[in-house]
Length: 268
Picture 1: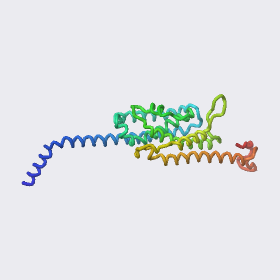
Picture 2: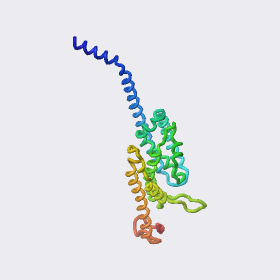
Picture 3: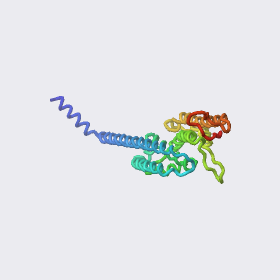
Picture 4: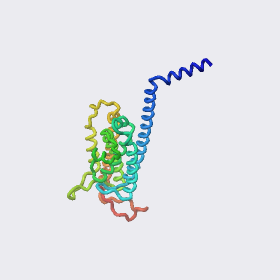
């Protein structure tokens, strides 16, 4: 009985301590922080998944500087609407200093979203989307960090590589814009090389924040970007070399098989 009485007296003393309200406030603040953080992480993952689906749909496009075909546009519009709702749902959690406090939790979703909208913008205009244009496509007042914008453009080179190689495989030529006054426009390899030059000249050494996504991921992003450009260069080189090795008027063996009667094939 004496032990229980001593414990009760100790609990009463703790509960009556003037420090208790302060620590209870700390507890509530930490609980709120963790709940907010989990909501943002979940929204970021959902934005990433929807953005990837938009990119998959856009890879079915076959022409540059043309409107997105209506069936594909209908698909991606529904996903854009879902992404806007996700941004709006976490916007209250990202006001003021919280926009930077939770930037890392939202970063991957923002990068994937920039990759998706910049890919569509390029397909329609053969130009890069600006930071302001990308910011305007994020609802709820969520701030798009410059680092996430740049890293999203790094990832864009991978999609341009896939689009270029698919175009060569299905159409036999490198995708190219329409140009002005009837002139031949730029091809996708010229744009990829221009991006490579710009990215390689990017200086991140002045950034003092070691946690910055740009400073943390820049080396790997540059390596992947170079590999993407080189893949297109090698594919174009192979296509040209095969065309040069194939003489004008070349036809396959027509002695037997389904090739009989086919017209002569011009070289590239």
